[in-house]
Length: 618
Image 1 (cartoon, helix red, strand yellow):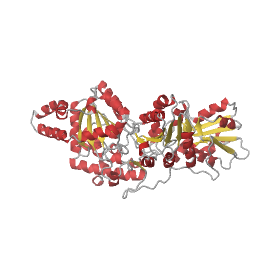
Image 2 (cartoon, one colour; image 1 turned 120 degrees about the vertical axis):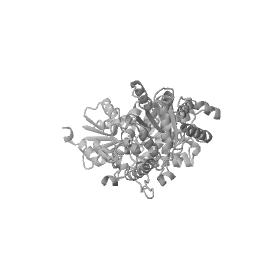
Image 3 (cartoon, helix red, strand yellow; image 1 turned 30 degrees about the horizontal axis):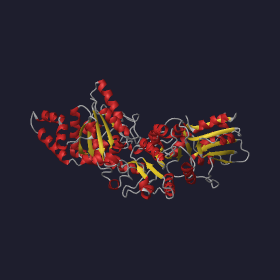
């Protein structure tokens, strides 16, 4: 009786349970998947609109494929929630994006059904191409499917993968999920090209009608259909005298297909498997489907925190580092027409909505193309503009070559607003902002600022734009400023010393970790040195530190190659012979909140207090 009271979704323990379901039951299952995703994300936060758009696709894939022998590679991975629910993780789904819970992205260590770790865009085709080639070489006959959104096609690696994969003989299916959006609206050639493909209704009706007729002819219908399938391109050229960019890359192209029609999806997948070589299925979906607030405002419901299911309302976030950055840049642009703002599909996330509204001609959303954004900015600088590229720390990692070769060598003045720097909650290993300090240190003549408060941020942004040369960056965390004592005041200096009476110990830090440092030393005879400019480190700061018997450095960033290591080297350079201890982050950070991460790394108030105590090092 208890089994009868369970929903269809609760009874799914593996994808093979889908085989016994009728078409009507499958549609019911899709509704239950949406309900579960909405109810869970309202409590945990996460990516909503993108997941609601791929429910039918996920069901069709798992019903048709033999996973985990066949592999599904999700681009970005922010649309994998239904996949997780269908692959034995229903009971743990409430722990989504929580410490020790399930990840909001594919994670092979979490499940054999997660074929490839993901988190950044435009990588799925390349990964799937490699997996498919390995399957071909092993002769196992398995299929590999890459699922990418149309926004991923604004990233160059997607085309590198498509170009390599299309002319292979591997069993690879690329599903292009066309919801006419990436995170915000789509921009550029890709959007126009997909729009053109959607308009080819005459060709699509012809193909579907022909397929239906042939499939009902006994004995000879299916062989004729397969023959005509391989001649499809010639038929299309006769009708249109044109091809798609995907066919030019060597793929068999099918679409557009209704991505919310299970029967059409299953038929398309069957056709793709019949071909036995690279196929691109172009499906059309609605981002946020099934939840009205997300349908009406898919950008806001792309990634969000807690919200009210009935209204779709989220707690108002108010002022944040991102909003202060955007407001200050917009204020400066009012009196300086050289300022030009750039984002890579993160206009709202980086606080640049107001800038675009005020100065649309000096604003560019380049799509998910961070590498292009940096070189584009460098070109703007050559032309006499003052480009400011606002980018999440985790995505700046993709721009190393462009920063080094296209910008630093020529010493072009490009300003970076590095958002989500330091520890970032919930999204886990793929979205941490702990590496930018280390890799920027390897690039000559980079200036890097780390504000501790909103007022600090305003000062640092002005310094970066008007008082530096070459690459100048300002790094700041997600969310709001951390509590600071009343005596704190933003100062237009590279470093600031907070003294206590008779101190022989010094705690050095930067950024918003200053809050924990000042709380940790409260009541102790320990001075605190705040670095505002962390690259290059002011040599005077090292000389000042060398007068203390013990120096401790606390860093919300990676240890290897980080600022703390550089400060230790600089101390030795100025002749320091005392004790130097560094506390920083070693390795990748798991999914957790910022407060949990600070506690895990010993960078919270209690951890830092223990760090500078005598007993900690005996």
